[in-house]
Image (cartoon, rainbow, N blue to C red):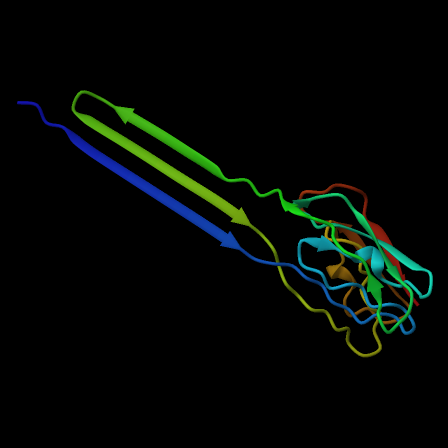
Amino acid sequence: VTTTSTTATATSLTSTSTTTSTTTPEPGTCYPPVIGADKDTSDCSGKFPPDGTCIVRCAFGFSGAPVTYYCYDLDNNFEGSGPDCQTTTTTTTVSTTVSSSTTSSSTTASLTTTTTTTSTTTPIPGTCYPPVIGQDKDTSNCSGIFPPGTCTVSCTAGYSGDPVIYYCY
């Protein structure tokens, strides 16, 4: 008597979240462009017309060539287009097959993880605005700081570098 048993299991897990930081610009400066979570507009803060320029790059997790935006007046704020950002998210598939003369087993697992976080920051009245300096830097320590004060900005997970002290006057 020969007994054969076959088992197949497939598992798929997808997780998604988004990060966006919004602050009110300094009076007289151009509003940074709002062009999507796949773009980093942190260089566009604190720019005055008519000669305001900034470099817009692809956000962490995306790749593409940076582009220049221009601010000629406060009515139109920044003007420009792009960049064309492509995701750098990867899909990993793991397959394992175990066979014997009486049992055959196959397991396939697919894991796709995309992480994006959304938060809007409006400072407590009288406190300094947290710096808007890019998604590769953690400025969470800079919220709720009253002048004169300081905060420490460090690198986010996946980046390395020395922490920097920011001053609130």
